[in-house]
Image (cartoon, rainbow, N blue to C red; front, side, top):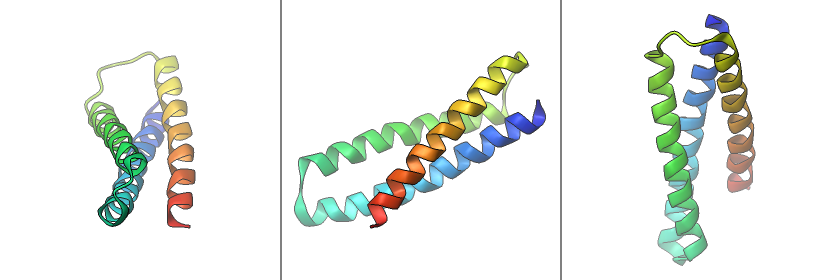
Length: 93
């Protein structure tokens, strides 16, 4: 179970880094063009960033959880990392 929790921690940490990069790029773009969609994307990414910060805190201070709960949380975190990675890649293009 510790390996699964470590994978979830790593994924949450990577999500935080990627989201900070994406928000930074979008903020620079928003300053230039003032598009409402860019602002909305930044707000959405901000909420996603907050969720990942809380998740990472929880993963380091987690109470005892059933193995199936840790497996599902890890899977969701890794899927989120895949989605954010695609978003970051497209943002850099």
